Image (cartoon, rainbow, N blue to C red):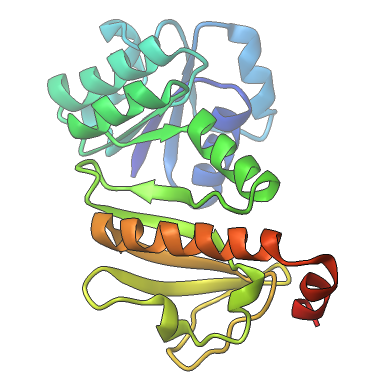
Length: 233
């Protein structure tokens, strides 16, 4: 495949090297010619200096026969303009844009342009560690009907089987991360303290799960110190 990447920062240059190592042809666009130094001398693809939504620049990068386009510069506006141009004008089948503003990301997802909202994702990951009550969304479909979430298992639920967290048609456990290792699980798996549980949920499934998690955390905080210590044993 031929892939055009707009933005030669750390993300863009890493994607370019990864794609080239897999045998794809790659063209990289950046306004700053010095940015191409990140690609190193081993990079054999095309580099084009210019603005990513300039048609002459895109043509020089091979957009007319591109199979995919990634807009990963540091500017939301530039990313979304170039992504829409690639999709709507040049008919590129696979387009993705890096967007820092999560509200904008949701809008463009609904327009059919996949986005990576780095601020939202990073915030969710940090909040998951700082506040275990947080149920972080790792992915949500453009219509906000289905989400993949990660739940840090409440201590009180250690010993539960996977199926006790599930609800037919609304919530399904797809994996568990334990001691740093992720695994696909079966319904009979017993959950342990510290597990990160990855679930696919719809809105009903999430709304039903959230108060159960909050209640478990609240009940644990309300325990006397000795009882709480005993509960951990």
